[in-house]
Length: 416
Image (cartoon, rainbow, N blue to C red; front, side, top):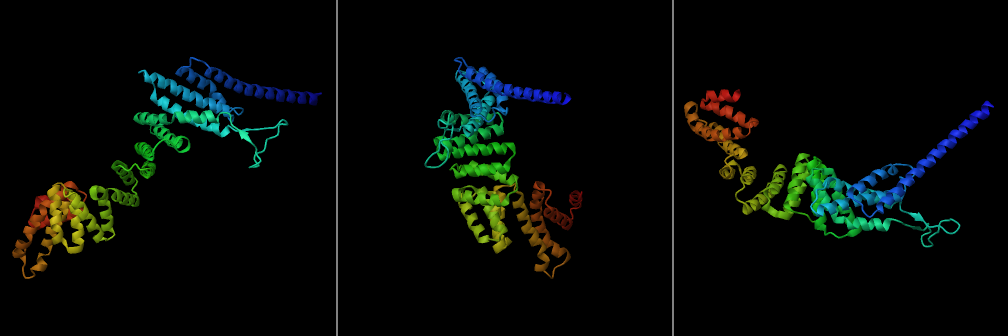
């Protein structure tokens, strides 16, 4: 009797659980029916759509309904419906939550995509067996929602671009990026309505969103995608250069500079400057000199370019021939630290060579030859030090000059 009672209890528990699961599943399907009834209402408002989305939410994760195409079809339809009602309100001047609207579009698209992946109904014959396609040998199937879903997505194509802009202006970088990604995806797979340059511009916007977020590597990738689609404005190169610099990608910077040079030529010195520095580092002075001449012919007011020209000339022909370029640099930009350092370096080196040039002189006679050169170097080194106090070469030169000229107080100051 005790064994019979135990078995009976277990059977009753099993039956109870089975009934509970059945009622739970029925409850979720009842939810779908309730949502469909709300969708058929003639007076749907944005709040009604929000309420229906709340009603539907449990069905999105329940085992009996989460893999059903209709569940996600309804989710997408409700999200798009909410967006459309908000747009109606916005069109007549009412205040709306553009951030919520943007995310409704994003979530609605995700729901529709899920529904599309599940919307496959296998055709069966009178006996309930799957019909077979004679050509492919695979079961025949049809769809229930796919046509309507594809049409709805296509009709909201441009809305994703607008939503991306609204989300970006609200500093929702991830949301803006996602909305623009969907915009490009719809164009590639459904509408094919936009020119490549439009898609390129949207890729540029995505890159800006990643840059704002601090994702510099991703930003670099999307600036490249923008240029690949024909959006090749200078700003696309400028921002990419900023991001590459932030992640210290030297090879990437040089590659970008080459691309920019092939498009803009010498009219954008900042990119040519990168190539020139690379040539100098690789001791390709002829290449560097040629680029410098192109830039100077295009723009003879760039102080840094004249400084670089001086460095190249110095490597090939010596400092004396480089001096006019260094002097031109500080003439154009009196605050240029490197230009002053190089002019000061010329006079300082000349001063240190005096003993070698005049081996018979010593003491006061030697100082009379060297000190004027040190005095010529001094203001340039002081200016360079003022601009960059971390330059040890400048500090060492100043120590030596102050000592040679008997400037005890200044020597003490720089030591301190």
